[in-house]
Length: 299
Ligand code: HSE
Image 1 (tube, rainbow, N blue to C red):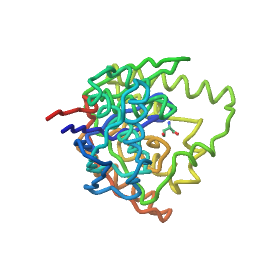
Image 2 (cartoon, rainbow, N blue to C red):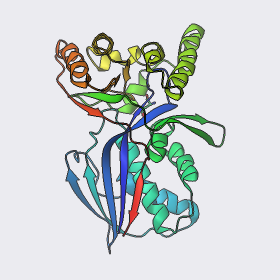
Image 3 (spheres, helix red, strand yellow):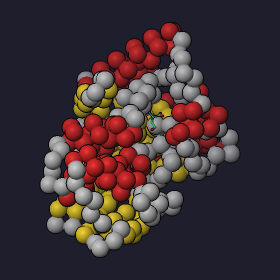
Image 4 (tube, protein in one colour):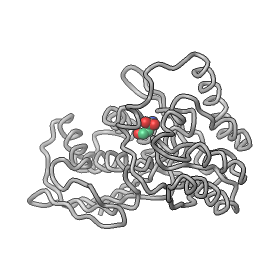
């Protein structure tokens, strides 16, 4: 029996569109057992909308890896314990991709190392910002080159809490990407690239007071505000309540605030109130950063 525990992730972190992300201590766990047919069992809080046939993302990903190495697919009984809310910008699809790759790789005798798995996961997702922290843990910056990726782990155990405020709506990533303009004015490129530099510096030097500026963005967040009523106000209220910085998590609708320990609840309530003024209900979690990424247990 194989079990993989994959952390939820938050991508972009403000200006780092498609390249920065972090892993949090909230997990989807996938168990794979040998079986005479493909079979799925769903457990946990969030299991709606998971296909229970060949279209299951974990299964499709596993088959892709096996196809690449010429390995015959083996039917499995796959149990999903879902604790990461789907379609909320917390990397739930990435947990299935990473889970599928780690399980398929183990069954095939470990032909790929974690870096090769990241390359394949990036190819599947189209960008590495969720899959990189899901595989390595911590806060990551991952650069795509023509035929590879350059992953950097900036920090594993930062002292802040990641407060995630999860609105009670779903946002499909495809739609949230579709509304972004294809061209960005030069001054916005300068705005974002300078802040990505500052963000990296803030994490490496643990200078979290820089995050109020370093998490600012001009190329995707406001463009997505129509999908998340009250988002700009909620991000602003996080800072007013004492958060170091705040950003849209992935393509939303979840909002992420970097908080000094002790004020998580206050920050979350301010953010939730701002959303509620726009008739958007939400829940929140105060999470630590996951330092190790996906873990595979073979029994
Ligand atoms: N970087 C991606 C986006 C994350 O913002 O669209 C969601 O997959």
